Length: 478
Ligand SMILES: Cc1cc2nc3c(=O)[nH]c(=O)nc-3n(C[C@H](O)[C@H](O)[C@H](O)COP(=O)(O)OP(=O)(O)OC[C@H]3O[C@@H](n4cnc5c(N)ncnc54)[C@H](O)[C@@H]3O)c2cc1C
Ligand SMILES: *[C@@H]1O[C@H](CO)[C@@H](O)[C@H](O)[C@H]1NC(C)=O
Ligand SMILES: *[C@@H]1O[C@H](CO)[C@@H](O)[C@H](O)[C@H]1NC(C)=O
Ligand SMILES: *[C@@H]1O[C@H](CO)[C@@H](O)[C@H](O)[C@H]1NC(C)=O
Ligand SMILES: *[C@@H]1O[C@H](CO)[C@@H](O)[C@H](O)[C@H]1NC(C)=O
Ligand SMILES: *[C@@H]1O[C@H](CO)[C@@H](O)[C@H](O)[C@H]1NC(C)=O
Ligand SMILES: *[C@@H]1O[C@H](CO)[C@@H](O)[C@H](O)[C@H]1NC(C)=O
Ligand SMILES: *[C@@H]1O[C@H](CO)[C@@H](O)[C@H](O)[C@H]1NC(C)=O
Image 1: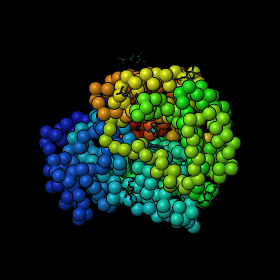
Image 2: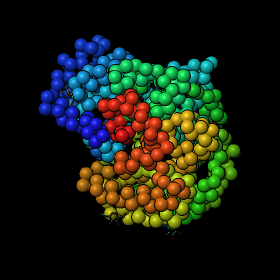
Image 3: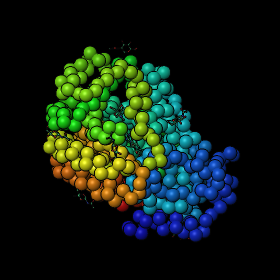
Image 4: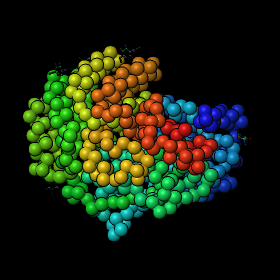
C-alpha cells in the first residue's frame, strides 16, 4: 500500500537520474505545434501552467501544453510507460502539503482546452477541461443563463467541480458538481471514456467529489439555468471596528438554523497594515433587488459599522471584486478549513484576539480568516448516495487563508493555524470533523476529507481505474 502510494515520488527521483529527453520522447506522438519545454528552457514559464502558491509546491522538469484529446491520451500513455510522474493543472490553485512529494515531474498544462459553448435551448453548457470560472460568465450572460460557480474568476471550473464547488449561488443551485451532466476523461490507461449517469455511472459517481484521483477531464457538460434577477445581485460590504465583534458573531449565529436561499454571508477578519488595525468585514450577497435585501442589510447597519457600501451589480462584476487580491499568485499561501453547522461567538472572539496578536507579532504575515455561510437547501435535494461528495450538511465553511513571503514563518504559521482549526473543530456542531476537500490542508485523515461512508467504494474504484496512482497527488485515495 505504502509503496504504491509513494511510487510516483520514487519513480520521479528515478526520472531525475535518467533525465529523459522530453522532446524526443513525446513530440512524435503529439499534434503539430504542441509546446514542450524543459525547465531550463527560456519558454518554460509560458508552457507550464502558473501556480498560485509557492508553499509546498511540486517541481517540474518539463511541461507540455496539449491541444487535443489524443495528445492528452498519448502523454498519459508515454509518461506511464516511462515511469514519468505528471500533474495536469490549469492555474494551479490547489495548495496542499502533499504536492511537494511530487518532484521533477511533468506538468500537463490544460490551458488550450478553453472552449465554452452554451445551448440555451437544451440548457446545457459544454466546456473544455481548462476553463476558469471567469471564462464562462460572458457566454452565460449573453444567453441569459447562469450556473453555480466558485467566487473567484481565476479558479478552474473543472478543477473546482471535481472536489465540490461552493459559492454564493449555491443556496439556489447547489454545488457546482450538482450541475455536472457528463465528462470526457482520459484514464490512467490512456483511454478516453465518457462518464455520466448512463455511461460508466460508478466512475461518474466518483468524479463528483474525488475527480482528481481518476483521470484528466478534457471536456465537461453542465446544466445551466435561466438567470436570477437578470444576472444582477445586491452586494454589500460592511466594515466593523474590532470592539463591535461580539454583536457581529451573534448575528452570524442567528443564521445557524436558517438562511434564505438567495442570501450569502461572508464575515472575515483581516489586518490593515496602513493603520495597524484589525478589521472585521462582513460581505453580504443577495440574488435580488436591494429592496428585497433590505431586511438583512438593516440587521448589519444596526450594529454600527465603521464603513458600508451597497452595490447593484452584475454577477460578473461581483466575481471580479471577490478576486481582487485572492487571485494574486506567487506568495507562500496555504489554507486551513473546517465545515461548520454552529456558530460559537466565544470561539470567534478568541480567534480575533489571537489573530490580532499574530498580525502584530509578524509584520510579514497578511492572511485572512473568513466564513462562507451559504444555504444548503438546494444541495440537500440531491440524494447523498448519488455522488461521492460527502458533506452536504455543511452550512458554513471556515477558510483560513495564510499569506506571507518568509519561509521562516512556515512552522509558526502551521502551528498557529492548527490551533485555530482544532478550536473550531471542537465547536463545529458535527460529531466528526468534516473537511471541504477543495480547501483542505493535506494533513487531514481521509475519513475527514472523503468521508468514512464513501471510502470503501472510492477505494474499489481507485483500484479499478488508477491502480498505479498516476492521479491524485494532493489527496490520494488509498
Ligand atoms: C483564490 C482562490 C479562490 C477559490 N475560491 C473557491 C470558491 O469560491 N469555491 C470553491 O469551491 N473553491 C474555491 N477555491 C478552491 C479551488 O476549488 C481548488 O483550489 C481547486 O482545486 C482549484 O482547481 P484549479 O483547476 O484552479 O487548480 P489546479 O491546482 O490546477 O487543479 C487542482 C486539482 O485538480 C486537478 N485538475 C484540474 N483540472 C483538471 C481536469 N480538467 N481534469 C482532472 N483533474 C483536474 C489537478 O490535477 C489538481 O489535482 C479557491 C481557490 C483559490 C486559490
Ligand atoms: C517502470 O517501473 C517498473 C516498476 O518499478 C519497472 O518494472 C519498469 O522497468 C520501469 N520502466 C522504465 C521504462 O523505467
Ligand atoms: C480565461 O481566463 C483566463 C484567466 O482568468 C484568461 O487569461 C483567459 O484569457 C480567458 N480565456 C478566454 C477565452 O476568455
Ligand atoms: C470583542 O468583543 C468583546 C465583547 O464586547 C470585547 O470584550 C473584546 O474586547 C472585543 N475584541 C476586540 C479585539 O476588540
Ligand atoms: C486601511 O486603512 C486606510 C485608512 O483608513 C484606508 O484608506 C485603506 O483603504 C485601508 N486598506 C484596506 C486594504 O482596507
Ligand atoms: C505599524 O506597525 C509597523 C510595524 O510594527 C510600524 O513600523 C509602523 O510605524 C506602524 N504604523 C502606524 C501607523 O502605527
Ligand atoms: C439595478 O441596476 C439595473 C441596471 O442599471 C437597473 O435597471 C435596476 O433598476 C437597478 N435596481 C435597483 C434596485 O436599483
Ligand atoms: C503553537 O501554538 C500554540 C497555540 O495553539 C501556542 O500556545 C504555542 O506557543 C505555539 N508554539 C510555537 C512553537 O509557536
